[in-house]
Image (cartoon, rainbow, N blue to C red; front, side, top):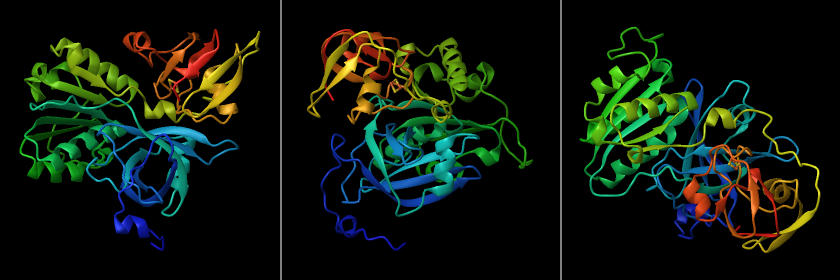
Length: 360
Ligand code: FES
C-alpha cells in the first residue's frame, strides 16, 4: 500500500503509552456492510497496544478549526497487539462518521487517546454470557467474543444481535465463522424485518420478554453485556431485570455512538465571578480557571490533554481523579456515586469551587 512500516514489520516491542502517545496511522479501511466500515490503526513507531476487549479509543479528528473528538469501540481481539480496529456506522447527518467514511484512508494519521472504558467482561473460570447488541453497538461485544475465541477458553456464550434488516447485520459472516469453531458460542440474529432477504431462516422483530425467554431460557444464570442505542439498552435492561437477571450481572456500555456523533456538543464558558488555580499534576500544568467555567473547557483552552466526548456528563470519558479541592458537578449519569465517593469527577460538567489538583 506504499507505506513504510519498517518497525512494525521488525516486531519491535515498545508499548503504546496512553499518557504520552497519541499519533495513530491508518493501516486499512474495510467495508463491512453497506453503511459500516472498519478502520485499522497502528502506531507509526510500531508500538504494541495493550487493551481489554470492550474498551474504546477517543479520537481527535482533523475536522473544523479545532478538530472534533469521538469515541469508537474497538472491534478487534486484544490478542492482536500491533494494531487495533474500530468499526463505525455512517450516521445520517453525523459529522465525524461521514468524514471517516468519506476521507479516512491508509497512510493518514489521526490523534487518539486510549484505551479507555470499563465495559469489560468479569474475569473468572466460568464464562456464561449473554452478549446483547443492537446495530453498531456490536463492536465491543465482537471484541469480547474474538478475545474468548483467541483464548480457546471454555465458554458458554449466547450472542444476540439485533439490526434493522439482514443486510444491516454487522460481522454476520465473521460471527458465523467463529461459531463453527467455538463450541460454546450460540448465535441469534434478530432483524426487525427481512427486507431484501425473503429466505431468512430465523425469527424477526424486536427484543421482547417472550423472545428472550425463548432464545435464552437460562438468562437468569448469565452475565448480560449489552451495547446499542440508548432505547435498545433501556428495553434490554428492563426485560432482563424482569426475567430475573440480578442488576450486578447486567453490564452496559454507557455511551451511545449515535448520540456522540451529533453536532453541537461543544462546551461554552460561563461568566466568571472569580478564578481558581487548577493543577494537572501528570502534565505539570496549572491553569487559572474562572469559577463559571468547566474544568474541561479550561483544559481545552489551555492545551491540557483530557479525554472527552459528550462534554455533557453522560459518557464518562473524561472521568478523572480529583486529588484535592472541590467542584460543583452537574452530571447526567456518566459517573456512579461510589466513583464520586472514591474521589472521581467529570471535568466536562464540573466547575471549581476551590483550587484543584487533578490527576491528569
Ligand atoms: S465527556 Fe462525557 S462525561 Fe465528560
